[in-house]
Image: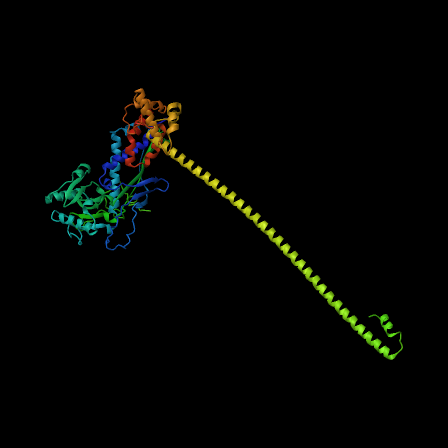
Length: 331
Length: 242
């Protein structure tokens, strides 16, 4: 084979993808299932959706009753258009040295790339959640709910409300996870609440706080979701995310690394350019499985992070992503 | 009675008035007789004419009947001919259809067999990516086994190959990997005891497979990637040293 380095490039992308995905907190809690070949021309792929199968009742005495029509769950896929692209773009003079250093199992360089991509992906998804319309937000500190800031005296009541919201939709609240900042952990500590733990989650999910009042709480470190106090830097307000695994479908059907020659007018002596590309998108195909909970800790008139408009207040690590951070739509 | 006979009977007295009257009466009578004869004659002619006419008519009828019969016979003949031709054509058509059907069946069976054979070969290549199928021709025993036993509807190529390797290994008391290495693709190292999950001799991909997987890798799911990556990296490492 003339040049095996080219065969290592797609491996590099797969390795980075595997690593950055494991480094995330919010993204890895999403469903990553998709089906079929990714259509690179139309940028389409199918996502399986699992609807409930109706249970019919009848009586054996009614012998002449025809059976209810059969339901075919096989066709339960939703075709989506994947139109987001994430890429790195860098140059290097010695192609093989770079590839060798990146494809090593313990490559520090690759770990750095994976960490950056994880932070970026988590932030982007968090911003997309925060930008969901008001109908998808539970303003828990508002007059309709607690009518007070979240504190050690009402934290359990807050969890009761969240559970009740899910139960009212005939759903199981144990399927939901609560993603919030470190401030909730502090309040739980102050309230001296007994925190239970699910061993598997504790082992696998970084940021796992525990099970409080039957709700799995996971602490994230996405600053785009919080507003901090100017002096103490403690979290004043935040958008917590209350979701199931299938509440968000995170799809990455294409990932590769491309290489190309850098011209001498771009780099002295020329060199090799690289692009690590991922095509991805995220969707919310079950609307009642994803909520944004607006939490306020110091005053009920404090504002939660705002991502768009003239007075955007979100603390974005990677700059303005108001264009990209939007849930994709099904075809 | 004519005029001379009349004169004889009267004794030749011609100038007497009474004789004249009688004569006139006789004449009259004669005239009447003549007209009666004429009428008789006339009647006879009409009857003849009628007969003649009837005869002619009869002849004409008979001729017409004959002509009609002939026409009918001709038509029947024609119809029979047409029917025969049609039957012949139908028979020909049916024969052609049957022939076409038979050919189609033959072709579809052939196609099906070809398809099954190619699927079988594909399955073999998947299970033994490092075995060169073309090398089977060089081994008379294996080739004979394949020719007699391999059938897309019966024993698969994998079964024939495995049973041959098993047999040769038992008889020669050589390891299966060593026996199989005789059919390995060029450039594939002998990897005896490599513990390949495929059960084949090699645990690296062929060059073509490496290229194919590299092309497919960007769209692989994590599960697909995990399934191939170890062998793929071994293969890339092997070919990079070459």
